[in-house]
Length: 320
DNA sequence: AAAGCGGGGCT
DNA sequence: AGCCCAGCTTT
Image 1 (cartoon, rainbow, N blue to C red):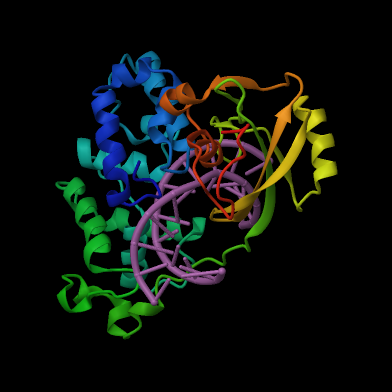
Image 2: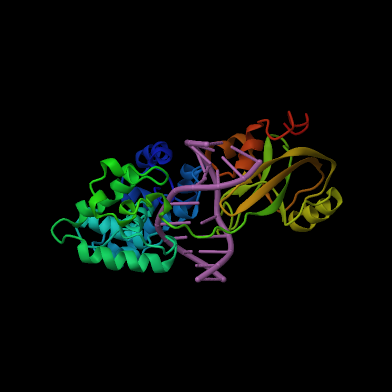
């Protein structure tokens, strides 16, 4: 949960999660969809899919026991260099450097490294250096101290050099250039995409389909959706909905729009309602049942709740 | 090596 | 509204 996510944001999810899945066996036994539903709203959903797969693999490959080596952890889904190193160093006291963003920032400043922190080259340099200084008798405490120094003292914008134990060894601070580090990678521009949604409610049921495992909101259930790199006119949309979902009807009405901002993408969500005139390639799911136990995208969730959003006040009578 | 994948907080 | 934050997988 803490991959790319702050402790504060993760806590409520974590508490619900360990209550429902108190041990490895219960997590491994659960269907992936239930894991996704508990993850709903936390983002980066590949983590949830990977965690579900990881638990199952720990049962089948490792007999329900946690491995104790870096290489074994690295072989599990969703476990990369940082997570593998953090687990084996903190839990099993193995001397492997654990480089998260906090540690990367600390190392970048200590060594005044000009290499961009996100690059594989930086990771190689930091790993080499940390391997030389990690104390074999207390690698777990060493890694934890480095992580917490980054999280609590060597802050991204306002490093607290005055109260930093490492200040005497810090090249960047000695040069008075602590704020020039870490050097960040160039970030690619955000591309815009348009998701056109069709929505109706029929006898208390709403249309849903499962998004592919790969891609945005993978594995979540969504309203019928036409994706394009530009906004589409209603006539184009009706053709597309008919072709892709066999969804046809009358009284098409543009309800409004909302926007989701991802790291690398701006998703413009445009909502339409309609009166369907035939069954299509989607499931008709009881609205309340969907809310109760289906993993839903934010768009599907809002329509299922009948909430106001974007610039429209309420759905037409026949819809909700 | 680069692209893809969320959502929250701060300004 | 725009910027900052941040690990793993796939291509």
